[in-house]
Image (cartoon, rainbow, N blue to C red; front, side, top):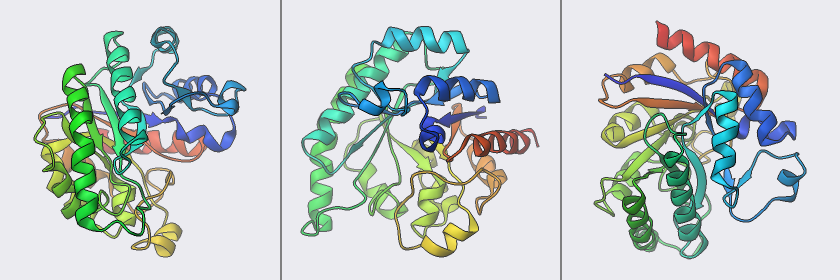
Length: 284
């Protein structure tokens, strides 16, 4: 039986214009023990100035070891959201994220297995047909999965685009490479907004599930966007929207590996309510 733990994606402080440090300390203060930092290549002026939570893959991993130890935090996954349909930056970004995750794992920052998240672009070029998209993804997955195998890091493909956000095409993507390191970072909200049944989607990929984005969708957003988009940046507080969290937990509980539900919401207040709601669901 899986032990389900609760973490939070650092996007919850994006609109607060606060730093990674501020957000991580706030997460710890609210009671979270796991965070999911968002990384980029190069540097960000706003991040350097303390107005953005994004972190650079050039940051010394020792910094995270010292900071997380001080805050009694662990990392659930490395959000290195590269583009699976990009033959240049997409591959480079993913590989750097994988090697960084290995460095963090070597420093004891993962309680479970090290995971890097990736998705395909939400807006493929108009000229790109489905056969072209799968061919590009297959080509890109080869060097990415070789890097995963070399570093002992799982790749979690996330529903967040016209191919990954649908169960049938996600299953086809998982067949493009036979590496055991190729898994799914399931996103409840993105799959729902794409018009899928998130519970049936989860059943279809549960054997490949490695990490889960706990994203709820408000009724208003559902009415306005469901079936029209393939994902959204963050959701509402877990328990305030359309997702049945007891049903999600029940589907995940039989898994033979521990799993982290990483909350994706937009404010500190939503993060606080999400944690309380999910704690209640898991306790029940």
